[in-house]
Image (cartoon, rainbow, N blue to C red; front, side):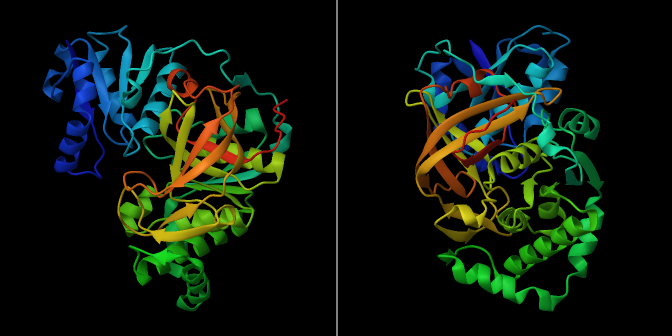
Length: 402
C-alpha cells in the first residue's frame, strides 16, 4: 500500500482541492495510494506527494525535512496532474532535490501506463559561454518567489558564471513608483491595449489602468538603474496591491527590455542570453503538461509579449483571478526551448520543436501552446533530470552554447 498527502497553495478552495483529487482518483487507485493527513507524516512509509497546485515547492521541502529523520534515504516521489501548475511545481522541487544529491522522481499521472524508457540522449550540457552577457545589468525587484527553490542563485554566482551584474531593488521602491504615476500618463497606453485586443473578458477599466501603472513604474526603474533586463517578485503585487505585472512584463519584452516574472533570476538570465544570441524576443513559461507517447509538451503563462502572437484577449491573472493576464494566439512555427540551471548555473537543457496549436483551457495560465519536440529531444528528460520549472521559448535559430 502506498500513501499520498496533497500539497496545495493558498489560492485554491477546499472544494477545488477535493474536485482535483476526485478527478485523479482512478490514477491514485492504480498506484494503490491511500490519502493521509499531516499528523501521520512522520509515521507513514511509501509516501507520495500529490502536488495539487503550483506554489507548493517550499511546502514539500519543509515536509520532507520533517520526514528525513525517520526516512533519511527514501526516494522522493512527486505526483503531477495536468492542471493548476502541478507539473511545474514538481519540476522545480525535483531540481532542488537533485542539486542536493537526493533521489527522487516525478510520476505524471495521465502517462501512468506508459513505461519509462532510457533516453537515447539527455540534452543537458555544460555551458561555457558567458562572454555574451559581460557588463549586462539585471534588476531583481524584491526577492525571488518563495517557491523558486531551485532558481534563486546568489548574485555572486550570476556574475561569476555569466559576467552579468545583478542590481537588487527593493519592492517598496517599485510600489512608490507605482503610486507616483500621473493619471494623464495612463489613457493612451490603456486605450491602445484595449483596442488591439480581440476581447476584454474579466478585467475592469481600473485593473487595466493599474497594470499600465506597473509598466510605467518598472520602466522608470529600468531607466534609473540602466538595466538590460529585470525580474519582479510579482505575486506580492497581487497580495499587497491587488494588481498584476503581466502586462508590464509583456510590454517591456516587446520593447527589447528582457523582463521575467516571479523574481526568477535564472529564467530572466536565460531569456537575456537567448535574446543576445538570436536577436529574437523570448517567452518564459511553465511546462504545464507533457505527453510522453507523442513527445509533446504544453507551455503556459500570462505574460506573453504581444509581438509574438497573432491576436490576444485580456483575461484575469490565472492563479488569483485578479488584474490582467494576457491570452495570446501563437502562430505555428519552429522554436527552440532552453533552461539554464545547476547549482553554479553552468548547465543547459536545450531542445528543438514546433508549435502545433494554441489552447485556451481554464485550469492553466492564460497563453497556452502545444509543442512537439524533434526526435533528438525527449520530453521525458523533464521528469527525470529537470533543471527547474520555467522554460524559455524563442523562435528557432541556431544557438551555439560554446
